[in-house]
Image 1 (cartoon, rainbow, N blue to C red):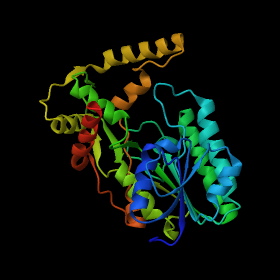
Image 2 (tube, rainbow, N blue to C red; image 1 turned 30 degrees about the vertical axis):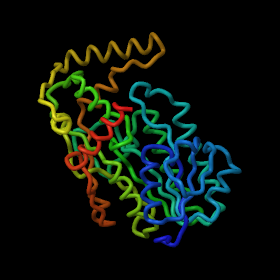
Image 3 (cartoon, rainbow, N blue to C red; image 1 turned 135 degrees about the vertical axis):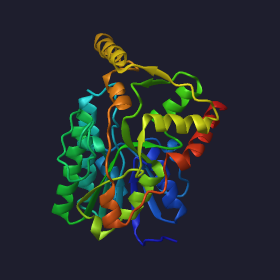
Length: 331
């Protein structure tokens, strides 16, 4: 039984967020189409699959046919080891989004939900940022996401469908081998080094909250032409994250500290090494920034306008993530 009475397309359905979103929609009995590059990676069993890239106009038109809501997740994601990959960011995030919007412009779409990034606003900030702040992205990735957001709003206004932007900070949860996974692995193998004092705060969001937020804004008039920042509603320090992971692993705390001055020297060496070799090294200024710079956001707007509250956080989900991490070690 379709609980909302309309059809849904999820692009990037084989990705981390996409798989979680599709599973939730399937569980709720939605009529779903998915757009993927590799159908073997798609988590669903009962949806209609369109296997292509975002530039296949013929398939895109078939995919959006009779669709009312689009969740757009296809993206070239941010890579702190290789932030200057400008061509791919703009090709996929901007031009790819435009191709999908072109197809939507001649379809029956009612609502286009675009999953963006807080990096469309900034890379770091000493103060808490919200949707009213002026966006000043400083990386090609952030610039590409902001341009894609503007395209979404422009097409919605021109062709008469609702549009919503969900800006996400670092997303974590089972299935994501990103920063949190890497930190779990480093702590588990006694390789983690605390850069500086570890008291810098950063906003994060569990994938469950991302999925919940997407469903919460779906076809909501109040969400039309709006940008919403989605977070856990908790600002974590690196120390908080370290202690939560240590507890989840059942280990004793044994943090190693690196003075920030020494860390910067190694980061600069990584930058130089990357330029010389043409290959991204595992530690550079971008990675150091993630570990030491504050980056905090408010998700008050979506609470006030949509009534959305995040249910998941590091404290009540780390055990699940640790179980997933350990399951990979036994494969």
